[in-house]
Amino acid sequence: MNKKRYALSTSTIVAASLFLSGCQLLTGYQKIDEAESAKAWVGKIQPVAGEVNIACVGTYHCEIVQIDKTLVVSPDNHEPVNPQIVASLPSYKGAATPQMSIEMTPLMSKNSIKIVPLAASSMPGLTNYYARVMPAKREVHVNFYPENNMGYVERFAMIHDFADAGTYQLRAYQKKSSEKSGSLLDTASPEPLCIDLLQGNKVQRRFCKQLGSEHQGEFVETGMVKAVTSASKPKTTTA
Image (cartoon, rainbow, N blue to C red):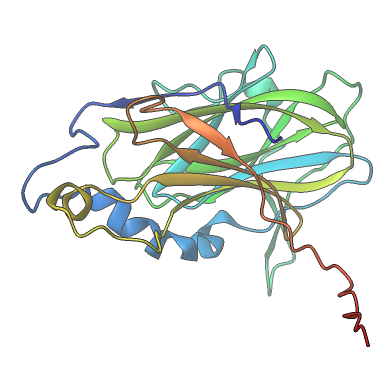
């Protein structure tokens, strides 16, 4: 029997509530699908052999605020907590056709953490970063901003064994429900926010916000649906 696992997560909603009456909706959830074009401003991750890259995508803005016990990006001013962990600033090479190049010195130890500036986020004045770490089991804390509003933040945390080097993404999106009861509450409430952990292009884990009474406000890890193919047994006939 599969047991649900719960992400270490909390959420803070200052400007609005998840449950709204009448025709009001959280506009941020309506914009999440549009934010899938985030690939245009997330930039290109520059992998380093033997290292793990961790990025977040899918909302107006997101930031990796903590890895293990190391604070990475401040949730208050949205800037790196320690300038020494930021990869060297971009430099331009060539006069005719300048290209941006970031110094990617390999990490020195298992506990080393570097963050790399990717590009401007969808919120003016903010920058998106991705993190570089060595393969290991990590606790990662990420703040997602579904609305163009710094007062509304979804705080998410998980523990994952990043055993294999490569690129991992925490992607937020609005879960589409295939079943609608048609009740006023269902039509007035937004679909839950979900976060997928992707390794390369493959979803490894999935967490969805719970709107029910038992675990309301929590991100609950859901079981991944796996296609099971079984050889059909030939029917036996009796004379």
